[in-house]
Image: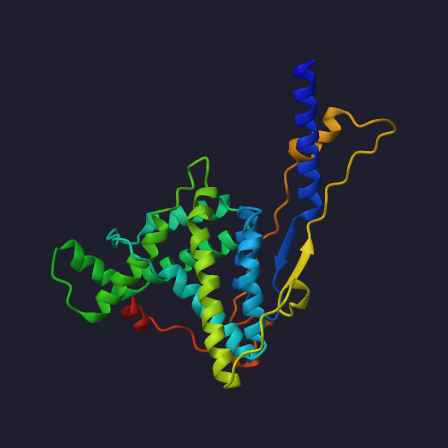
Length: 297
């Protein structure tokens, strides 16, 4: 009798838990008024854990408030810069392994195994940078000097070496042959996503304060006041139709259903050519191979 009662209580607890999660879970989404990279990052971060919605909602509300005092050009440009800068910057020991053909093969295999938009975008960005580096005559010259153990003194070569180290920091974390990939990579990316959102929030604050030259208006009271973001309730799973009392299988269905989710394909848009980008950003010059900004790292 005690065993049956314990089983019944456990089933009721699971049912209540599932019902609360099915109807209480919310999702934060961006809009076309924000950089595509930011929207993909927010989508991915929430998919890692249901608790992540609550972590980023206050940050998103601040970003939303500050963005109202900024031009669309500044929102796009600064948002992208903060994302790229955050993911490139790290404080670990530099990895001296050069970018080579194995690097490209690893990235291509990883892209094939990745399903979510942000991870695919991130890996494709690493692949593009690696291919650009390998196609550079100066990088080939740098590798010849490095293999001959000659001292690297030319500034251009040191910049290329630094760029390779920045790429290898992430490439070293990619193991497409592992059974738990790409989950391991998403776990490594998660802290950087949160850091990038905080950096965007802080930079937007200074930009908005400079634009208004006065104290910013009070914080948003709740998510219903959002302008650049939207909060939606997660669509609850339809309960099976029954003519009589629910069975144990009916109650446990929300957590035992293993139907695979069809993931959307990643966007192939280049933000410089994106129709959502401001006209003043559509014809910007491509980054130079000199990569002077790398010296900041």
